[in-house]
Image (cartoon, rainbow, N blue to C red):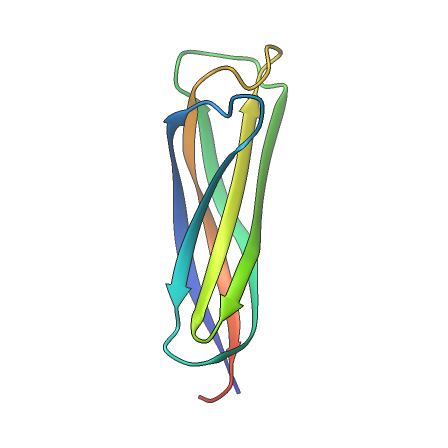
Length: 105
């Protein structure tokens, strides 16, 4: 058993969340069969792309979507809205730390 770490960055290109949040995923391969996987938020940056806004709500979450064999898929979801809803374009990134336990060192 060995514990390994990998930092990933998920980029959110300019766009609007419409009536909901934006979502992005990345898959990381560790080269060994996995026993467990988890993820922790390291940092993020979100910004409106069309001027200054008062922020009403800002949301960032990360989770392990699935893991199998040697691969972990991490999903990040973000939301940034003002009083008008999720109608303004925004962009940014999320950095996450993927933590896995492998079957052998």
